[in-house]
Length: 251
Length: 251
Image (cartoon, rainbow over all chains, first blue to last red; front, side):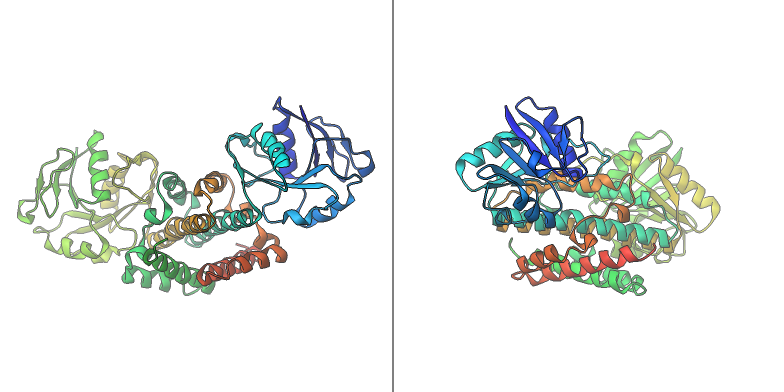
């Protein structure tokens, strides 16, 4: 049984503790957080000196605290991994064996997570540590992907486009609805269908709309409608241009 | 039983014929298309003079053909509606009673459609015609919304943001993955979760990511990664700016 200590008390830490709790291949023996709060019945501490001996220390704290937390660990030569998509492996203290355990998903505190379908991207400095991380990952997910640092950085960037930026386009749709006394609900079936379509079709092929058809008449009408919102208008122009560039590229 | 003639042979026309076929409140009595092809066993014609007498003529052709088709109809005073989100009611010939029957969804030829959940936005010049369109709409969908022209134009614009532009962001994610030897599949659970989240939470509240947190460190790293792709870099900058503007606005 692999013993794990989880450092942090945010969404990722909490969901990981709950999920590992259900596995019979690994065991979370301790939770470390600044308030010493127990999560899901796991013994907790706020004292670095009180950290138990474990096979793996998972640092699930905010990106800018990872380096500092790893430097405070009062031991050497143990396996320490962070859970961030954008932080370099090298930001972990070299006193310990370093790794990354990055779940490619967005977590909300109040919503249960089915880890079995979440891609876990892992990275380590040597084969033995990669095997440990892979074993731990496979104990909760069917989708485990060893990646290198460059790939992980790219995944994190791609995730910003398909998650954060997509959500912002939803927010613009919501805003346009509100300003015209329309319920955002009207757009929800379309949003669901758009997300579903690319499960079985490359998005470049799934592309439709006035930009794709180069329908100048509709494009011009839409730009006129956006005259009162210069930022939305710029977004419309830029994404239209990008769609048209992409259709000419061979990707 | 309301009698309908459907003009057109594209995705919307085909799906409407198949769906009305299953209803016992309306009946598609004829399909008109340039090749005179029968769809789903409905009698077809390619001859305007051979059009049957019906309670409603639905013009489901491409946007720029609507006006021409409506002008060719060889009768007066009947109810004629188009199915487009962006074409004005006034583009239909004034010889007939005019209306709009706009299904707010994206249709693919090979994929069956459950109309019962698709919002149908209807518009007419008088109450009696609006009632007919509403009756027809309710025969296939639980979500029928009378809208005015301005609202319909806004919905169509909002749909471009949440469908066409969102799909393009998926395509950018796909492109970034390909260029780094990563399967696009890795992003699919995140895409599904992002679309699901806004079903129960306003998108402005669901917003996460480095732009929302104003995490300058990550923003700068991402922009550097995009140096080789100026258009993606501009999109990153502009959407980041727009997210930050929106967080300060009271919407």
